[in-house]
Length: 213
Image (cartoon, rainbow, N blue to C red):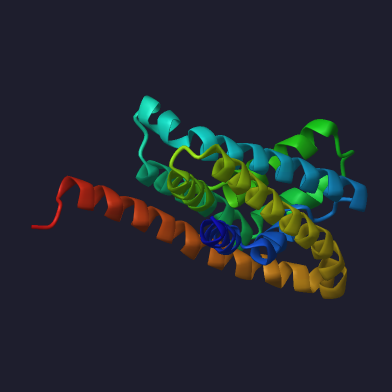
């Protein structure tokens, strides 16, 4: 059991990548107050936790019921991430945030940013959802392992929330110019990550339709 939980913690930590997501959080919440950022962080963490726990307990049955493959999650998530990456690379996201900051930040704005793209697909994306489903299958209907996996997910979310809080301090350290440079660099990285998700999904479909041998 300990080895399974250790593998789950390591896999989800690497897949979600709290420091990397915190940098994206910094770019997406540019111009917000500390209170607004904290609310966005809490909502994003809560939504992502709920989604991952849902897929831990019922992921495979849900996918089978809907006729959706893990490869489809990889392709769809990659396309969503690529859209975000394009906006970051060409500065559209930064301009949108400046316009957004000039207005009153409403409850609906905060909820929308927390749900997309932070909670889904950056935290609860194709990678973390796939990892959660595969790890849950190791539990083999042992409820104690299911709840232990949920506790592991909660610990990863707690680490991510702390990373979000430090992202605000990191943003002040960088300054306006540093944030712009970081946003462009992250856009390039996100575009590559998005492409890799799509490639993995397409490769999985190709292997399933044309098995070797």
